[in-house]
Length: 171
Image (cartoon, rainbow, N blue to C red; front, side, top):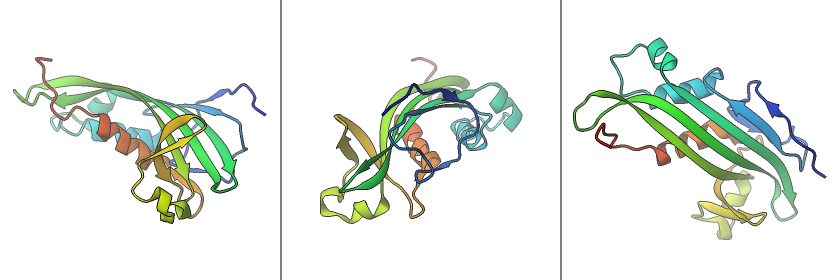
């Protein structure tokens, strides 16, 4: 049972409550710096440009997140959440060679799976960072005790896993 999703541009909480979602329906969201927790992530991407004010950083950069969510159920796992994420970011940083202000970009896609927290205690999930489900490999995260997916935390991790820590004007 699946319907054609519509894109939501309203605010999405930094922690998505899986229990409140309908099962087996993809939900699409587009978020940017107008969502408070996305704005926080964008400001952190801009943290190297200390000569700029917060307003200047936000005016001269963007973080666009396109998300697709689907609540799923498996008897051995229970309720879990699949998330497909596309990231497009343009932000201010400093050249590591010259210290000159410059722009940098981040563009990547990632698939994340949020399983119930108690699953992490099972031997087969110990030390796992990926989960194979629905014919695809997902980055593995866990829902908290309230069945909320820590979305901001997971996206923060993915941003900094994909970040170029040695930006250079020469590249």
